[in-house]
Image (cartoon, rainbow, N blue to C red; front, side, top):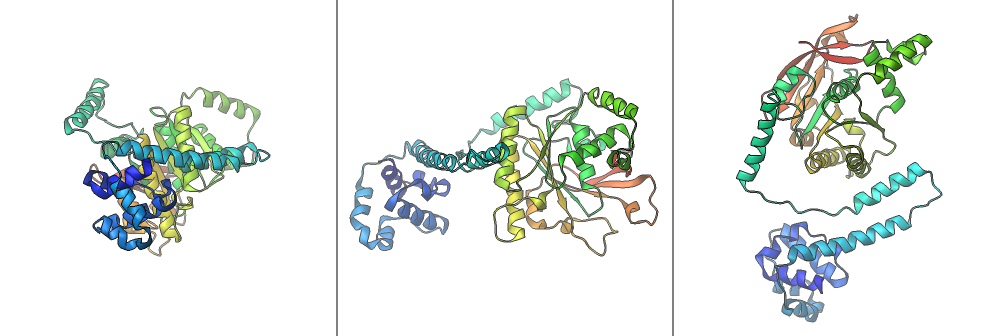
Length: 405
C-alpha cells in the first residue's frame, strides 16, 4: 500500500515529484520497481511525468497503472513513506549480508566484512533547511568562544602559526589535499601535521601505503630526535630505549593509527564513522588518496569517486579530512608544483577546500644539507581565504617538517 501511495503521489503532485531524485527504485517490488525506474529516468531527462507517458511505456500494464493512479493518495506523508521503504530494503540487505559472513574466518576479516555491510545498509538522510539567522547565530557563537579563549581561530589550530593565519585552522566539513611529488615527504608532512595538531584535537592517521610499525618508527625518530637508520637497525642502547619510553608517555600528545588492509572507499568511510563513535574525531589524515579504490571503471573515475565521498564524509561527520595525494612525475619537477600537477586533478581541485604542496628545492641538489631551510608549504588553493607560502624546514634524518617562525 505504501508503494502505491508513493508512486500515485509522485504522478500527481509537484511536491512528491521533488523526492524522485533521492528515491532508489530498488526500494520497490515487482512492477512498482519498473514504474519507479521509468519515472526516475523521466525526472533526470526533464521529461514531463504523466500517466499518459507511462501508458505508452507500459502498454500491457494499463489496468495496473489505472489502479495506481486512481488510488486515494496523499503527499503529506511522502517523507515518512520513503523512509519506511528504504528502511525495509536496507534491513533486508543487512540480514542477507550478515547471513553470508563465515564465522570461521579471522576476527579482523569478520569485522571488515561487517563494516562494509553496515556501510551498504546505511540509511540516507534528507538535507535539512535552516533560516539564515539560525546559521548566522551559530557562527557568532563560535566566534564568541574564540574571542573568550584569546584566539582568532574559528577552526582547530593546526599547530603551525603561519598555516593558521592563512587557512584559519581546520574547519568542520573541509577536505584538504596535500599533493607532493615522489621524494617530497608527503608521509613525513602527514605525520608532522598529526603530531602538531593532536594537542588540540582527536586525530586519526589512516595509513594505506605504510604499515603501522613503519609509521611508529618515524614517530619515534620525530619526537626523540634519533636518526631513522638507528631505529631501523636497532642501533640503540637500553638506556636510549628507556629514555625514549619515558619521554613518549610524558608528551601529553597522542593520536590513533589505522593500518588499512582494505582499500575500498566503502570500507574506509565505514571505519572512519566507527572510529568517531568509539573515540571521537576531529581530523583525519589519509596516506594516500590514489591508493583508495573508489567506484568506477577507470583510474580517474575511481579517484574522483573517492575524493567526492571523502568530501561528503567530512561534511556529514563535521570533521576535517586531510588526504595526501601523488603529483605527476614531470621533467620540470624542479619547479614549484601547480594545481595541474595533481593526478586526476579535475575532481580533486573541485572537491578540495584547501590544496597544499610541500616543495623542497634542496632535494634536487647533489648534496643536501642535514636541515633544509629552504623548504616551503605552498597554499595553492584556499576556498575561504588567500593563498601564500609557509616557510618550512625539513630534517631528513628525522623525516619531519617544521614551520620556520
